[in-house]
Image 1 (tube, rainbow, N blue to C red):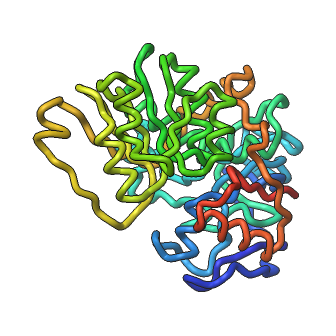
Image 2: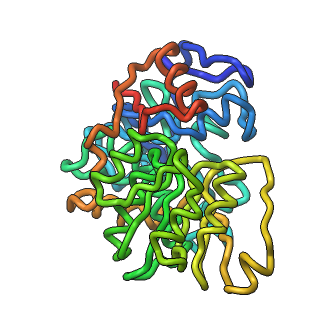
Length: 341
């Protein structure tokens, strides 16, 4: 089958012909219809986060069931599905508690095992979720990472109805986070970015735009909240400056949830920024499989809209995919690029 693969860190992805995946008794073979190009994929290509080489990238996948193992009971050939990107043991203390992202034997598709930049992908039955007919494949694909992680971040931050939220970074995660925060009852949602096009898109979803290129976003947030700050800040960029700004924007008892990936550290003033107002910094790792059905139902019910100029289609070809990854590294205008087959 055709696959677009990372063969060397720091090098462009390459098209290769590889053997079709083997389907085990508990496995589902999915014909890929859509695969999201995520900022994490750019990190893998650049070496920011380690990956097994050579590998087919792509951890946001939706498609149609092509073949099933003999013991599979939940799916039949032709079913629409989307793929939870973690393959776990299902038996360890973390899996039993629903925190399978910390399973010691977990493998992430597109990072530890071949992913969705290909014509087919094979995963265990428990990693596949039925994709409702109302949700297009391209939207179902990107929901498996950006939307699911945004929901998990809001859950980790314990967002309560009536609270205020600042979303740092209006990319794929940010657009989902804005809508999800609204649907979870946030009183006001602030979208912080330096890209005017992305801020305009955020305003279409009733977010209040904070242009960080026009001035200090922390000062702007404090001014618009009459000096109070925000209850929840989501950092989705992965830069020390935006992480620091997220912490500094917090109100008393505020929570900053850090999602963006970086190897760099940032400074915190413990007494002034945390202790004196009992503010919290919360790490967010991936999401839970149990959150995916909730997310899919919200999308099916029209509470999560990923159609308004958010998705740019890309073919399963090395050149356009590398260009999309370049744009992510440069924080370009694309909100989400998605491979469509």
